Image (cartoon, rainbow, N blue to C red):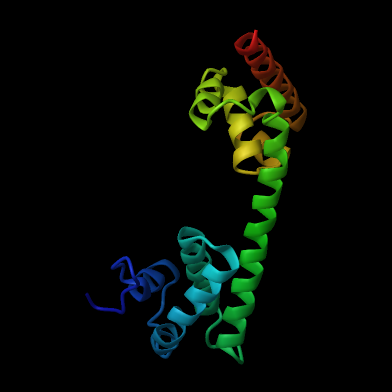
Length: 174
């Protein structure tokens, strides 16, 4: 491989060059020196290999885009990792909080597989709303754009989906 590779064997520097354009110059040296430390830092903030990798790569992409213009690339990268990890934590918190709306007392004895089966039984648009809203943490506006409808329609779809799930859970109990 021509450039330096991350832990998955991906030629990251070449991938960044290809995506953003440019030769890289001192960026490759910066990347080699900083990647392991920033990756560990991101993991400690997120406690997830996948999220830490995404956060780290997004941070390096942000640094690369402004590499010649920023005074201290290391500080910029650290701050970017902190901000991206914070954004992830916020989305995760929203997902967990909203997930409790879906997982009520009737679901306590229900396994994850059964819950997924119940959601899979919903009409497609209702399923998209439930998964996007409660699992992915999307806003009603984001879901509306994807579905090509108004946010009010998303609210209606969510209401109908939760009512149907509630009925099916009620049938499962009785």
